[in-house]
Amino acid sequence: MSIDVHDDVISGFLVHYTRTHYTVFHPIQHRLMRGRISYDTPLTLGKYYYFEHNKFFVTRTNEIYARSWAVSPGRYLPQNIQEKFEGKVWAPFFGLLNDQNGMFVKKFGVGGHGGIVVKFVNRPNEVFKIRNVEKREYNFEISQPPIWNEIGNSTSAVDDFTRKPRLHHFSCARFALCVQEEAPNRRFNVQNKGSFPACSHLINKTYGAVRSMRYGRVGVWYQHSFTINNSISRRYSIYDRATATKLMAIDPPLPTKVVGNHVELTVKFLFNHDRFEREWSRDIQDWEDRRRGLKFNMFFYDEYLGKVEVQDDEACKIIKFVGKLRNIYKHRLIGDPIIVTVKVSPIREFVQRNCEDNASPLFFVHGVVGVEFAKRK
Image (cartoon, rainbow, N blue to C red):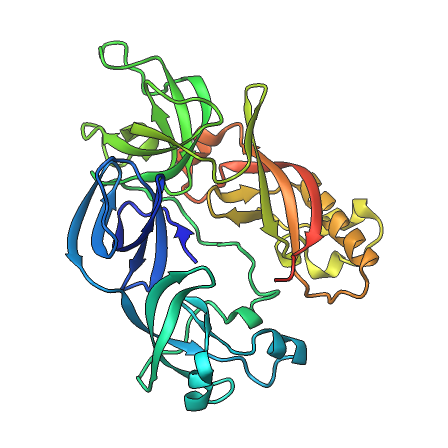
């Protein structure tokens, strides 16, 4: 399973590419990474590439193997879970893998940990194939639990997430959304012939709000590089020191539309009651009184937007919707994951927030679409 990444440089063995995207396997991080093609030069499968925005470097050619570790489902799991994952093992860097002929369980036992050697095969039903199992010393502690233990534990929230405060000449915003056109340029200098009184505003998760002097259409997603003004002190924000350049329009990673002059996105996140309300208030029936139990600085984390602020009124709606859903489906377990769908837009003062605090959300929830139990695979 490949994932979109926000790194400035994406490197690894090229294992797949289309007209618009490439996928590489990173041999150190042991994962597939997907990026967008921004050049016309032909690519070759199996070669090792370093991809920057608008250019890349190639090094060597090789077949793609990797060593890692895996675990098989234990007997402590409910019977239906054991049956669902029978014949599978889980590797933290590769996800679910087929345990062909039970070679992993035969060597390490049910619920055992052990080393594996995998090969990239890119078949419809499997991306990596276990070629061998081996006894090797590994640190089996990892923050991501096996998929069968994951339900109810993943909050999709990162308390310590902050945007990067510094740029390099190779820095790249992989997913940047244009949220304003003809906005006042607070760095405008009438004495500088290259300065413009207006600009477009783009927001990306990694670097925050950025100005574009000549290009940018509201509601369009871009990938772009940066032009850095080194004459401005580094104590200023990226917004003040740099502008977006080499903009390339990309497919929206989230449902995006323009309503009037404002951008509106449809976003889903995994509900975690502990992020919204304190436990002592959850049985209070009077909502005017219950609001006292709401937490401060409520937010959820989105892969493309970063932190998204949830204000009190929307938090109450979400909690009410979740309560109604659980009352309808009383046979469901209290820990069964619930997905919330919301409407999201940029915060009005996003430029000021961006420049004052790299951890502050730049988007907020302004409408709740609905809630549903996560679909079982």
